Image (cartoon, rainbow, N blue to C red; front, side, top):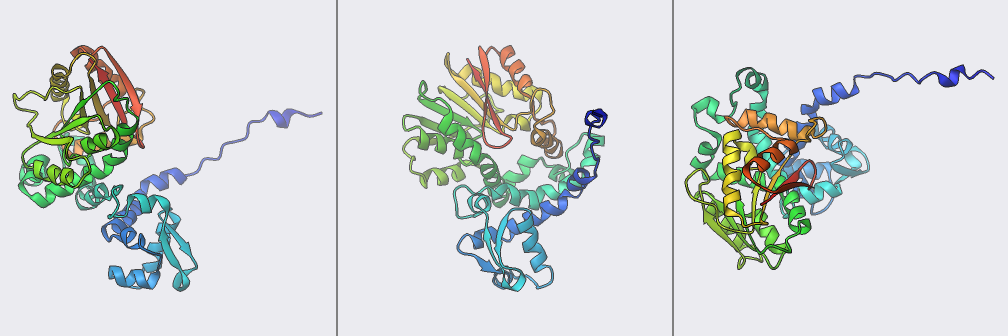
Length: 351
């Protein structure tokens, strides 16, 4: 019996498929971002619509209409019954859950901001890599991202709701699955809309929460708190974490996508402030797109770190090992990692 053929390894076929998918990925990205901008998924949340009905609601032309809609079908964002003029379109489960503006689970804010701001700034990633300098508003007028946002209420609201959208899934996971049984109070540093504090209060009836941020942000957080069912257990605090002001003394201190905005010195400063404010056994919970320590798996975390290059003067995302090293140096007794939604994790340091 000739077994030689059985021992020959099957030759792996090399194709350019992945290169083309990633290299031309902005085609697909812009298609989705445009649908979000036009609120297509919000319209379809009410009932399925024909192509003609969609055309009229969104003010589109016939040319490109079905290519646009069927591309969203092929990409997995829409369902379709029928073909072309006979077709009716509806949301997929994911689109209906996360891209309908009328739902609390809406994450489209970050996509709106990506379309409005980030898309054009990423066009000069090569310049950012060669100069090490941000490519956003600071490049045009010398004003930093945050200073620019605080000058205009509409821009500030867009940014805050964008952050709320991208973080909400992880906030909900943390609020439900983190063990709060030994804790009674929480302060969310840089709490923006108050989303994390509200979610913890909703899921953990024994917890009293503070959302702390700058004075420009407080009215937005207060609106969200007033509209919630937990306004008796969530309060706002005006706090500039770069000032001498100490953090509130609470059992848990959280930071959601805060540390990655800043350089190493400021990261350590914020962690030290948290350490001094916590009691023994208290927890610092940092929610980020934490990069795996071998820097091979969390592609989104690595890409987000490039976004910090685009957006900030010194910011960068970090690995689990980075956080563990900083926490140990500061004096925390132990650390742990809690996977949350998608590429996001909570890295936790216990005092």
